[in-house]
Length: 280
Image 1 (cartoon, rainbow, N blue to C red):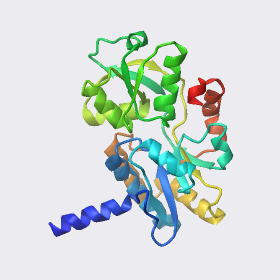
Image 2 (cartoon, rainbow, N blue to C red):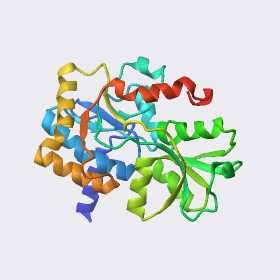
Image 3 (tube, rainbow, N blue to C red):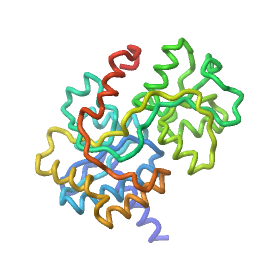
Image 4 (cartoon, one colour):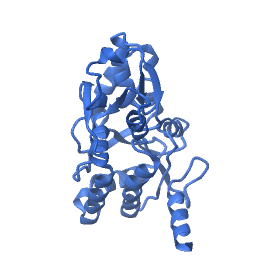
């Protein structure tokens, strides 16, 4: 029993909650909550431990209970590295975050889905119904699909699930009629939970989320962390970690990190130029 309690305590410490500070200095890394908090930690903890060891720069995972909570840490400058696509609106680009990488993954799409056996076959049937989304900060999974519904004049009742898994759980519990989501996460959920979906609508493609660094990070540290992420798949140990963590969340095993720049996210900026005012 004592061993189990110690293991649990060690796990909880790796989450670096909102009220905590990284031990022995270092920097905090906040990835958007694409999964529930346990699965998010299971995916990212081995990766950031590897990056810490390889770069010599200490990183600590800092995630909130919901994706909106995690993004709030970013906006209040409580973290120095992020994996996010919540920072490309005109106002947030003024904060000075710099893109240095992304995952080598197929483009992602915003989608609106229902269970494969649902009687709903088109978007218009959602009028007046409850539709779940991960949270108000989710770009691909909320802003993009909800903008489509607003532009079509389909008035729905918005429900937030806290993350993609939470929204999908409400769908299969019968609490909502449809879910707005990220195609990558919906596919991963289908694999993990053996579920089937009918896709009512898909958006144009967007690049996967960006690895970004704050302008307040020392250049030598930023470079060391970036190189550790980007070369991880070239090191047998790093490659094994990527394979194992990807399998846990339903990603392809070769979902490694590659260089990226701000230009890769022009499609995000384009969205904000014509998005409904409530979503800008």
